[in-house]
Amino acid sequence: MTGGLMREVPVLVVGGALTGLSAAVFLGVHGVPSLVLERRDDILAHPRLRGLLPRAVEVYRQAGLERAILDRCPTATPRELVSVSARTLAEEHRPLSEVTAGEPTDARSPCAFAPIAQDELEHLLVDRARSLGARVLFGVELVALAQDADWVTARVRSRCGAEDTVRARYAIAADGASSGVRRALGIASRGPGTLFRMATMHVRADLSPALRGRRIGMAYLGEPAPGTTLGPLDDSGEHWFFGTARPDRCDADPAAWVRAATGLPDLDVELLEQVPGSGTKVFTFPIGARLARDYGRGRVFLAGDAAHLMPPTGGLGGLTAVEDAHNLAWKLALVLRGAAGPRLAATYEAERRPVAERATAQALARARVTWRLPDLDTEPAADIDSLVFGNRYTSTAVPGSTGSTPVPPFPAGTPGTRAPHVYVDSDDDTGLSTLDLYGTDPVLLVGSAGDRWATAVHRAAGLLDVAVEVYHLDPDVAEQHNLGPRGALLVRPDGYCAWYARDVDGDPDRVAEDVLRALLDRDPHGSPFPQRLHQQA
Image (cartoon, rainbow, N blue to C red; front, side, top):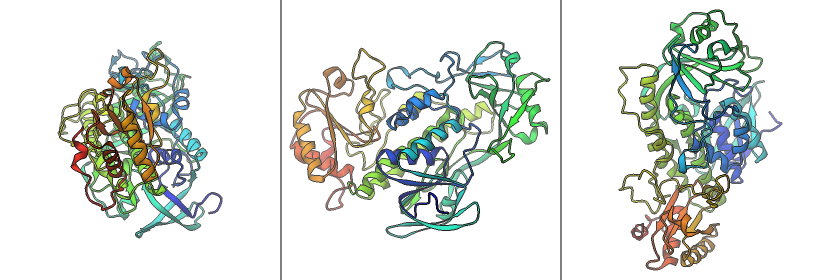
């Protein structure tokens, strides 16, 4: 099993799909090599996720992938790529879209919903991860996992049966809803579990007689079962994603499902392989919801479906998985670099579990309508933008947060929330966003008269031997961050606000040092961060 196996590596990633490959990319952005092991022989050639919500595009933008993602999306105009509902594709379409493809979500983001298929995205992620120093191996499975105070030790097996041992400082379990790592760690899950099974296919067919010139991003259809989905995979008009619920209740011939969904009984349907050479043309998997009781043990962390399974309705599962990887990567990078203490990595669960709980509840609310599940008890569906941009973290990695106030509709510098997007050049809405300032190191934003905070943070960063970038904001940009002339806002590498000060008060040198020590788990006595950190927020 030579030819790519790294026997000692900073981070081992188990699972080479969306979550695991994203983790490898984000770790690579921070200069951390990783080894990704995927038991399948190749990327699964069916789309699964059918688009990225704007926040996911933002974090891939940090990794230099936004342009490549947009280049893989269909070229139809944004207004044409809408979600619709109908009994069959040939009948009248009713618009459903919550997010319009290709259009930034008003002033909140420089990025738009990107209608890319997951298999296309995963090919981009493999290439980008490898370019950043990761080894991505297919046809290799995890056999056993153990850990001690310093290392994770994995026994792995290749498709030919050869076994080897890998040691890593940390491991990320991104091995899906039936995670073997989660079971090996003895971590239970809670939630309603499997609701039903879904079947998906990659279909080649000419659907122009049903569409009659109409363009769609995704169609939710009533035949052959409620919630059947059909969407384009490219601009050719020939390749389509097809999914239907409860295939056991449908006709035995999968091609007949497509004919029923399109309303074209004589349609010529070709089903393509999911993995080249496998012969598998229909892929089935459970639709359900459950949340792991713990997000890891010791040096092993769960991410994506291994930590939380939710229905695909709303695209929240993909967004949650990508942000899991994004949240964990910068923390592990700083710990491995020696710039932060190990409790920084432990804040991953405190921050991401509440997000997954909310996303799962909202995905279930949408699933109840999409698949007509009247017996499913759910909360009302919330506005999609509040789910994409309205999360708030509360942990020791947000030293300026009290967690006592609700998230405002448009967070502007509130500790624990995503930092605002503002174009640096207000006359050029295609230029640099303030979100482009974040990615590798903490960033301090200060008002036009914020030199005292800038000096204090530079001093503290030097004392702790960490890098902090400092930017002075023009008054109009500062105002949109709720910053006065003498104010300061510390933003983490993931673009979330860590601490905020309205003005210079007390001893800025001491406050700046306390804030960085708290954020990075660098308090020399291991005691909770001082209450005075909250006094200016």
